[in-house]
Length: 352
Image 1 (tube, one colour):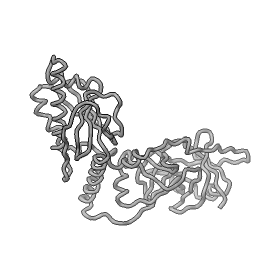
Image 2 (cartoon, one colour; image 1 turned 135 degrees about the vertical axis):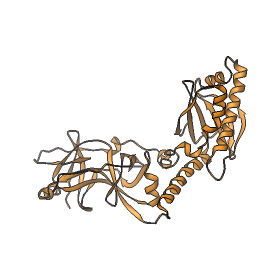
Image 3 (cartoon, one colour; image 1 turned 90 degrees about the horizontal axis):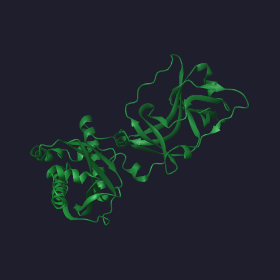
Image 4 (cartoon, helix red, strand yellow; image 1 turned 180 degrees about the vertical axis):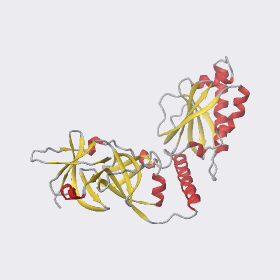
Protein backbone atom coordinates (compact mmCIF):
# COMPACT_ATOMS: atom_id res chain seq x y z
CA UNK A 1 0.00 0.00 0.00
CA UNK A 2 2.98 2.28 0.32
CA UNK A 3 4.50 3.78 -2.80
CA UNK A 4 5.85 6.92 -4.38
CA UNK A 5 3.85 6.81 -7.59
CA UNK A 6 4.82 8.59 -10.77
CA UNK A 7 3.09 10.89 -13.21
CA UNK A 8 2.69 9.50 -16.71
CA UNK A 9 2.70 12.13 -19.45
CA UNK A 10 1.43 11.98 -22.99
CA UNK A 11 -1.93 12.12 -24.76
CA UNK A 12 -1.88 8.42 -25.63
CA UNK A 13 -1.76 7.12 -22.07
CA UNK A 14 -4.44 4.41 -21.77
CA UNK A 15 -5.99 3.87 -18.37
CA UNK A 16 -7.77 0.52 -18.45
CA UNK A 17 -11.07 0.37 -16.58
CA UNK A 18 -11.11 -1.28 -13.16
CA UNK A 19 -14.39 -3.11 -12.53
CA UNK A 20 -14.85 -3.75 -8.80
CA UNK A 21 -18.16 -5.55 -9.45
CA UNK A 22 -16.22 -8.17 -11.44
CA UNK A 23 -12.96 -8.17 -9.48
CA UNK A 24 -14.19 -8.26 -5.87
CA UNK A 25 -15.77 -11.33 -4.25
CA UNK A 26 -19.32 -11.03 -2.94
CA UNK A 27 -19.92 -11.39 0.80
CA UNK A 28 -23.17 -13.18 1.68
CA UNK A 29 -25.70 -11.86 4.16
CA UNK A 30 -24.92 -14.43 6.88
CA UNK A 31 -21.16 -14.02 6.49
CA UNK A 32 -21.50 -10.26 6.95
CA UNK A 33 -24.14 -10.39 9.69
CA UNK A 34 -22.32 -12.89 11.92
CA UNK A 35 -18.70 -12.00 11.08
CA UNK A 36 -18.32 -10.00 14.32
CA UNK A 37 -19.92 -12.57 16.62
CA UNK A 38 -20.58 -16.19 15.72
CA UNK A 39 -17.89 -16.50 13.02
CA UNK A 40 -15.26 -14.57 14.97
CA UNK A 41 -15.84 -16.32 18.29
CA UNK A 42 -13.48 -18.60 20.14
CA UNK A 43 -15.75 -21.61 20.86
CA UNK A 44 -13.89 -22.14 24.11
CA UNK A 45 -15.55 -18.95 25.33
CA UNK A 46 -18.98 -20.54 24.82
CA UNK A 47 -18.09 -23.86 26.47
CA UNK A 48 -14.93 -23.19 28.50
CA UNK A 49 -15.07 -26.42 30.54
CA UNK A 50 -16.11 -28.78 27.74
CA UNK A 51 -12.79 -30.64 27.57
CA UNK A 52 -12.75 -31.14 31.33
CA UNK A 53 -15.93 -33.22 31.16
CA UNK A 54 -14.17 -35.71 28.89
CA UNK A 55 -10.88 -36.12 30.74
CA UNK A 56 -12.15 -38.86 33.11
CA UNK A 57 -13.37 -40.97 30.20
CA UNK A 58 -10.07 -40.46 28.39
CA UNK A 59 -8.14 -41.67 31.45
CA UNK A 60 -10.35 -44.76 31.88
CA UNK A 61 -9.90 -45.73 28.25
CA UNK A 62 -6.17 -45.00 28.37
CA UNK A 63 -6.66 -43.30 25.01
CA UNK A 64 -5.11 -40.13 23.74
CA UNK A 65 -7.99 -37.67 23.31
CA UNK A 66 -7.21 -34.20 21.96
CA UNK A 67 -9.56 -31.43 20.86
CA UNK A 68 -8.00 -30.02 17.70
CA UNK A 69 -10.38 -27.37 16.40
CA UNK A 70 -13.93 -26.17 16.11
CA UNK A 71 -15.11 -24.52 12.90
CA UNK A 72 -18.17 -22.33 12.50
CA UNK A 73 -20.19 -22.59 9.29
CA UNK A 74 -23.80 -22.25 8.10
CA UNK A 75 -24.52 -25.63 6.52
CA UNK A 76 -24.19 -29.31 7.33
CA UNK A 77 -22.64 -31.77 4.86
CA UNK A 78 -25.25 -33.84 3.03
CA UNK A 79 -23.70 -37.18 3.99
CA UNK A 80 -23.42 -37.70 7.74
CA UNK A 81 -23.61 -40.85 9.84
CA UNK A 82 -25.60 -41.76 12.96
CA UNK A 83 -27.65 -38.55 13.28
CA UNK A 84 -29.37 -37.84 16.59
CA UNK A 85 -32.12 -35.25 16.98
CA UNK A 86 -32.16 -33.19 20.15
CA UNK A 87 -33.75 -30.04 21.44
CA UNK A 88 -32.00 -26.90 22.63
CA UNK A 89 -34.23 -24.42 24.40
CA UNK A 90 -37.31 -25.74 22.53
CA UNK A 91 -35.57 -25.69 19.12
CA UNK A 92 -34.60 -28.78 17.12
CA UNK A 93 -30.93 -29.55 16.47
CA UNK A 94 -28.83 -32.50 15.31
CA UNK A 95 -25.55 -34.26 16.17
CA UNK A 96 -23.93 -36.52 13.57
CA UNK A 97 -20.55 -37.97 12.59
CA UNK A 98 -18.49 -37.48 9.46
CA UNK A 99 -17.26 -40.49 7.48
CA UNK A 100 -15.49 -43.03 9.76
CA UNK A 101 -15.69 -40.94 12.94
CA UNK A 102 -18.50 -43.03 14.42
CA UNK A 103 -16.63 -46.29 13.83
CA UNK A 104 -13.41 -44.92 15.36
CA UNK A 105 -15.22 -43.70 18.46
CA UNK A 106 -17.17 -46.94 18.92
CA UNK A 107 -14.05 -49.10 18.55
CA UNK A 108 -12.22 -46.89 21.06
CA UNK A 109 -14.97 -47.45 23.62
CA UNK A 110 -15.58 -51.13 22.83
CA UNK A 111 -12.66 -52.65 20.87
CA UNK A 112 -13.83 -55.35 18.44
CA UNK A 113 -17.53 -54.57 18.98
CA UNK A 114 -20.20 -55.48 16.44
CA UNK A 115 -22.81 -53.16 14.89
CA UNK A 116 -25.32 -53.40 17.75
CA UNK A 117 -22.78 -52.69 20.47
CA UNK A 118 -21.29 -49.88 18.35
CA UNK A 119 -24.73 -48.25 18.09
CA UNK A 120 -25.08 -48.35 21.88
CA UNK A 121 -21.61 -46.84 22.33
CA UNK A 122 -22.34 -43.98 19.93
CA UNK A 123 -25.69 -43.29 21.57
CA UNK A 124 -23.89 -42.98 24.90
CA UNK A 125 -21.32 -40.58 23.42
CA UNK A 126 -23.99 -38.38 21.88
CA UNK A 127 -25.99 -38.19 25.08
CA UNK A 128 -22.82 -37.39 27.01
CA UNK A 129 -22.04 -34.62 24.52
CA UNK A 130 -25.43 -33.04 25.11
CA UNK A 131 -24.94 -33.20 28.85
CA UNK A 132 -21.44 -31.72 28.72
CA UNK A 133 -22.57 -28.90 26.40
CA UNK A 134 -25.32 -27.91 28.82
CA UNK A 135 -23.06 -28.09 31.86
CA UNK A 136 -20.14 -26.17 30.33
CA UNK A 137 -22.17 -23.32 28.77
CA UNK A 138 -20.80 -19.96 29.91
CA UNK A 139 -23.90 -17.83 29.59
CA UNK A 140 -25.82 -16.78 32.68
CA UNK A 141 -29.15 -17.54 31.00
CA UNK A 142 -28.45 -21.28 30.81
CA UNK A 143 -28.55 -23.74 27.93
CA UNK A 144 -30.83 -26.78 28.10
CA UNK A 145 -30.21 -29.66 25.65
CA UNK A 146 -32.60 -32.64 25.60
CA UNK A 147 -32.26 -35.90 23.64
CA UNK A 148 -35.23 -36.70 21.38
CA UNK A 149 -34.53 -39.47 18.85
CA UNK A 150 -32.13 -40.91 16.29
CA UNK A 151 -32.52 -41.19 12.55
CA UNK A 152 -33.84 -38.82 9.89
CA UNK A 153 -32.93 -35.17 10.57
CA UNK A 154 -34.59 -33.64 7.49
CA UNK A 155 -37.07 -31.88 9.76
CA UNK A 156 -34.34 -29.89 11.51
CA UNK A 157 -34.14 -26.32 10.22
CA UNK A 158 -30.37 -25.79 10.30
CA UNK A 159 -29.32 -22.13 10.41
CA UNK A 160 -25.69 -22.79 11.38
CA UNK A 161 -23.34 -25.59 12.35
CA UNK A 162 -20.21 -26.37 14.34
CA UNK A 163 -17.80 -29.14 13.48
CA UNK A 164 -15.72 -30.41 16.35
CA UNK A 165 -12.45 -32.04 15.30
CA UNK A 166 -11.15 -34.53 17.85
CA UNK A 167 -8.04 -36.69 17.58
CA UNK A 168 -8.28 -40.14 19.19
CA UNK A 169 -5.03 -42.10 19.27
CA UNK A 170 -3.85 -40.34 16.12
CA UNK A 171 -7.12 -40.68 14.18
CA UNK A 172 -9.05 -37.49 13.39
CA UNK A 173 -12.79 -37.60 14.05
CA UNK A 174 -15.25 -34.88 13.07
CA UNK A 175 -18.49 -34.43 14.97
CA UNK A 176 -21.13 -32.07 13.57
CA UNK A 177 -23.69 -29.97 15.43
CA UNK A 178 -26.45 -28.38 13.38
CA UNK A 179 -28.85 -25.97 15.06
CA UNK A 180 -31.50 -23.35 14.46
CA UNK A 181 -31.79 -19.58 14.35
CA UNK A 182 -32.40 -18.99 18.06
CA UNK A 183 -29.26 -20.81 19.16
CA UNK A 184 -27.28 -19.06 16.42
CA UNK A 185 -28.40 -15.69 17.81
CA UNK A 186 -27.57 -16.86 21.32
CA UNK A 187 -24.01 -17.86 20.37
CA UNK A 188 -23.52 -14.69 18.33
CA UNK A 189 -24.78 -12.45 21.12
CA UNK A 190 -22.77 -14.26 23.79
CA UNK A 191 -19.48 -13.55 22.01
CA UNK A 192 -20.32 -9.92 21.34
CA UNK A 193 -21.29 -9.36 24.96
CA UNK A 194 -17.98 -10.89 26.01
CA UNK A 195 -16.12 -8.41 23.77
CA UNK A 196 -17.91 -5.47 25.35
CA UNK A 197 -17.50 -6.82 28.90
CA UNK A 198 -13.77 -7.32 28.36
CA UNK A 199 -13.38 -3.81 26.96
CA UNK A 200 -15.40 -2.29 29.78
CA UNK A 201 -13.24 -4.09 32.31
CA UNK A 202 -10.06 -2.88 30.62
CA UNK A 203 -11.26 0.71 30.19
CA UNK A 204 -13.02 0.92 33.53
CA UNK A 205 -15.98 2.80 32.12
CA UNK A 206 -18.98 2.95 29.82
CA UNK A 207 -18.70 3.23 26.05
CA UNK A 208 -19.19 6.72 24.69
CA UNK A 209 -21.63 7.78 21.97
CA UNK A 210 -19.05 9.39 19.70
CA UNK A 211 -19.19 8.52 16.00
CA UNK A 212 -15.92 8.20 14.07
CA UNK A 213 -15.07 8.60 10.39
CA UNK A 214 -13.52 5.48 8.84
CA UNK A 215 -11.85 5.67 5.44
CA UNK A 216 -10.72 2.68 3.37
CA UNK A 217 -7.55 3.49 1.45
CA UNK A 218 -5.85 1.40 -1.21
CA UNK A 219 -2.63 3.41 -1.41
CA UNK A 220 -0.55 6.01 0.35
CA UNK A 221 2.06 7.96 -1.57
CA UNK A 222 5.06 9.97 -0.44
CA UNK A 223 5.05 12.99 -2.77
CA UNK A 224 7.74 15.72 -2.88
CA UNK A 225 5.94 18.94 -1.83
CA UNK A 226 7.02 20.76 -4.98
CA UNK A 227 5.31 18.10 -7.13
CA UNK A 228 2.08 17.85 -5.18
CA UNK A 229 0.28 20.34 -7.42
CA UNK A 230 1.15 18.15 -10.42
CA UNK A 231 -0.30 15.05 -8.73
CA UNK A 232 -3.68 16.72 -8.19
CA UNK A 233 -3.89 18.66 -11.46
CA UNK A 234 -6.98 17.90 -13.54
CA UNK A 235 -6.26 15.22 -16.16
CA UNK A 236 -3.02 14.03 -14.56
CA UNK A 237 -2.44 10.28 -14.78
CA UNK A 238 -0.59 8.79 -11.80
CA UNK A 239 0.77 5.28 -11.77
CA UNK A 240 0.47 4.19 -8.12
CA UNK A 241 3.10 1.50 -8.80
CA UNK A 242 1.14 -0.98 -6.72
CA UNK A 243 -0.07 -4.29 -8.22
CA UNK A 244 -3.84 -4.55 -8.50
CA UNK A 245 -5.04 -6.38 -5.39
CA UNK A 246 -7.73 -6.37 -2.73
CA UNK A 247 -5.43 -5.12 0.03
CA UNK A 248 -6.52 -1.99 1.85
CA UNK A 249 -6.08 -0.13 5.11
CA UNK A 250 -8.74 1.49 7.26
CA UNK A 251 -8.10 4.75 9.06
CA UNK A 252 -10.34 6.01 11.84
CA UNK A 253 -10.22 9.77 12.20
CA UNK A 254 -6.97 9.69 10.24
CA UNK A 255 -5.18 7.05 12.31
CA UNK A 256 -4.34 3.57 10.97
CA UNK A 257 -6.73 1.08 12.55
CA UNK A 258 -6.99 -2.26 10.69
CA UNK A 259 -6.01 -3.82 7.37
CA UNK A 260 -7.96 -6.22 5.21
CA UNK A 261 -9.25 -7.27 1.81
CA UNK A 262 -11.87 -5.21 0.03
CA UNK A 263 -14.97 -7.05 -1.14
CA UNK A 264 -18.55 -6.22 -2.06
CA UNK A 265 -21.86 -6.48 -0.24
CA UNK A 266 -25.12 -5.55 -1.94
CA UNK A 267 -23.35 -3.46 -4.60
CA UNK A 268 -21.38 -1.51 -2.02
CA UNK A 269 -17.82 -1.70 -0.78
CA UNK A 270 -16.95 -3.78 2.27
CA UNK A 271 -13.72 -4.94 3.89
CA UNK A 272 -12.83 -8.21 5.57
CA UNK A 273 -10.34 -7.56 8.37
CA UNK A 274 -7.10 -9.56 8.19
CA UNK A 275 -4.81 -7.58 10.51
CA UNK A 276 -5.79 -5.66 13.62
CA UNK A 277 -2.31 -4.27 14.30
CA UNK A 278 -1.07 -2.59 11.10
CA UNK A 279 2.57 -1.64 11.06
CA UNK A 280 3.57 2.01 10.86
CA UNK A 281 4.54 3.16 7.35
CA UNK A 282 7.49 5.48 6.89
CA UNK A 283 8.32 7.75 3.96
CA UNK A 284 11.44 9.72 3.02
CA UNK A 285 11.87 12.85 5.10
CA UNK A 286 10.38 15.94 3.53
CA UNK A 287 7.71 14.18 1.46
CA UNK A 288 3.99 14.84 1.75
CA UNK A 289 1.67 11.93 2.29
CA UNK A 290 -1.22 11.59 -0.14
CA UNK A 291 -3.79 8.86 0.50
CA UNK A 292 -6.04 7.27 -2.10
CA UNK A 293 -9.37 6.62 -0.41
CA UNK A 294 -11.83 4.19 -1.98
CA UNK A 295 -14.74 4.11 0.47
CA UNK A 296 -15.97 5.65 3.70
CA UNK A 297 -18.32 4.89 6.58
CA UNK A 298 -19.14 6.03 10.10
CA UNK A 299 -18.45 3.80 13.08
CA UNK A 300 -19.27 4.07 16.78
CA UNK A 301 -17.48 2.71 19.87
CA UNK A 302 -19.27 -0.64 19.69
CA UNK A 303 -18.34 -0.94 16.03
CA UNK A 304 -14.69 -0.28 16.84
CA UNK A 305 -14.73 -3.17 19.31
CA UNK A 306 -16.65 -5.61 17.11
CA UNK A 307 -14.65 -4.96 13.94
CA UNK A 308 -11.24 -5.22 15.60
CA UNK A 309 -11.24 -8.97 14.94
CA UNK A 310 -9.78 -11.03 12.12
CA UNK A 311 -12.57 -11.98 9.74
CA UNK A 312 -14.94 -9.18 10.76
CA UNK A 313 -16.65 -7.57 7.77
CA UNK A 314 -16.85 -3.78 7.77
CA UNK A 315 -19.73 -2.56 5.61
CA UNK A 316 -19.80 0.86 3.97
CA UNK A 317 -22.40 3.00 2.24
CA UNK A 318 -20.08 3.69 -0.71
CA UNK A 319 -21.46 2.23 -3.98
CA UNK A 320 -19.13 0.16 -6.12
CA UNK A 321 -17.36 2.30 -8.67
CA UNK A 322 -14.02 3.63 -9.85
CA UNK A 323 -14.14 7.05 -8.19
CA UNK A 324 -11.59 7.68 -5.41
CA UNK A 325 -10.66 10.61 -3.18
CA UNK A 326 -7.17 12.04 -2.79
CA UNK A 327 -6.52 13.03 0.81
CA UNK A 328 -3.67 15.26 2.03
CA UNK A 329 -3.35 16.15 5.74
CA UNK A 330 -6.85 14.88 6.35
CA UNK A 331 -8.36 17.11 3.65
CA UNK A 332 -9.98 16.09 0.38
CA UNK A 333 -7.90 17.79 -2.34
CA UNK A 334 -9.12 16.07 -5.51
CA UNK A 335 -11.19 13.24 -6.96
CA UNK A 336 -9.91 10.73 -9.48
CA UNK A 337 -10.91 7.72 -11.54
CA UNK A 338 -9.17 4.49 -10.54
CA UNK A 339 -7.90 2.29 -13.34
CA UNK A 340 -5.12 -0.09 -14.32
CA UNK A 341 -1.87 0.37 -16.23
CA UNK A 342 0.31 -2.68 -16.87
CA UNK A 343 -1.18 -4.60 -13.96
CA UNK A 344 -0.79 -1.77 -11.45
CA UNK A 345 -3.36 0.58 -10.00
CA UNK A 346 -3.33 4.02 -11.57
CA UNK A 347 -5.62 7.04 -11.46
CA UNK A 348 -6.70 9.96 -13.58
CA UNK A 349 -7.46 13.18 -11.69
CA UNK A 350 -10.92 14.58 -12.38
CA UNK A 351 -11.74 18.26 -12.94
CA UNK A 352 -12.69 20.13 -9.76
